[in-house]
Image 1 (cartoon, rainbow, N blue to C red):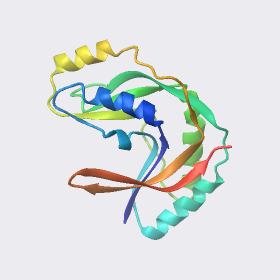
Image 2: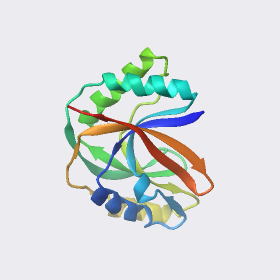
Image 3: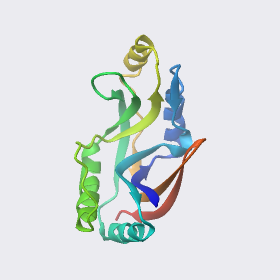
Image 4: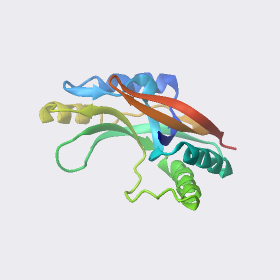
Length: 178
């Protein structure tokens, strides 16, 4: 079995900028800078031969390159105890056609569509018993956070192996946008 997801990479300078934010609140588990990515679809565990079907199916996606910027900050879930700290995406409307194309393409080979509404974001930390007061101060202080625009010229199929030191992500294949 192999655990798969599809994502857009973020430039190194942007990863470093947001990785620092993930370390700004006590009792959080920041996402390491080298693992920051914008997930388009989490597939989960599949058989090895099934991963080849997924790799091949994604070659059928031909969409134009675009640019995005990261903007805003928030938490999941939107109600209740926050568990995830994230940075949002400006120009998310450019991501949605790519996301929708991936969903349609994989549905043809019987990969289930996601039932939840897709909210483009970059997870920067996992929250564990952090002070709600400090979290609120952090969110207020970073409400206008925004990065410079950066180009999105490809997307990637990743495998993810869970270890005691955290997840290890490997690019299985890259897919250029046109």
